[in-house]
Image (cartoon, rainbow, N blue to C red; front, side):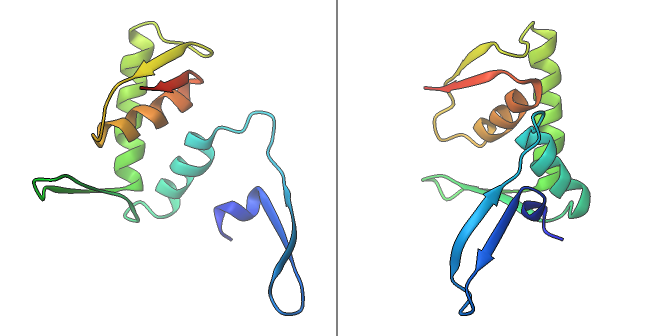
Length: 115
């Protein structure tokens, strides 16, 4: 079963066209843990992010990579005193580290303010 089926139910007409849907998220839903880390557990080598820049550099990250890096980042943020509910301004223009940071902040419940 796809992960999204845990949280999303779709209703199709006889032609396969979406006619309605329901969202079902628990109160403690956390995208980072419930989606990203779950995919990393089920399909660790699945490609999650392809980052390229204007110098033709490319970095490919799997869901396991995203999970591992975001865990490291989250630990650093917590050690620095960031906690659930804190607002954190993030200035990482066009850097792949932005995505590790976003997922890490989700994990600890902080609110990211992209800048």
